Image 1 (tube, rainbow, N blue to C red):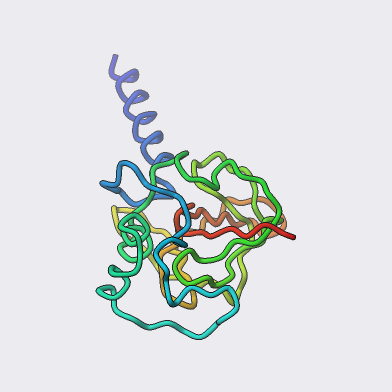
Image 2: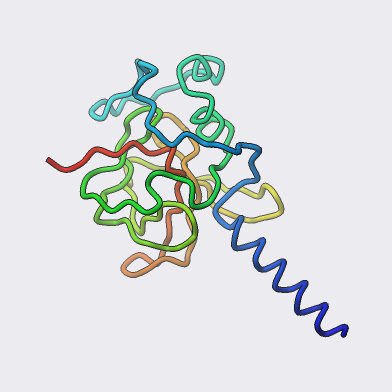
Length: 178
């Protein structure tokens, strides 16, 4: 009986770790994953690489509440809910906040973690920060241009890099290849 309880407890804990391996706990229950194009963001540009340094107060006026919560407060959309989770069109992924180039669709893969995953990022598009929130030791991925939260990177991805960039769909803006 005790062994059964321990096994059940272990499986329960393992399941929770898998569910939250890419996420921070969130109170967001209905994330809108559409890009932030309707808000007329004056900082959004897929060609400008100038560093953006404005306050969160200003971002809050510009971004949708859902995008603000994830990009500026490091929240997370629910697993399997994002627009780009099961998405396989050819094109480029940009930061939904500022338009900075982040990923190519050729680096996207199906990881089954519940969020869009990539094995390689644009080295000029992202930067990293240690994240020890929620009792986990992770590496947070941020947009290099506007410092917005995109997701996390893990060392369990496919070849050739062996890494998995686990991103929030709402933090991404996709433009199809013409």
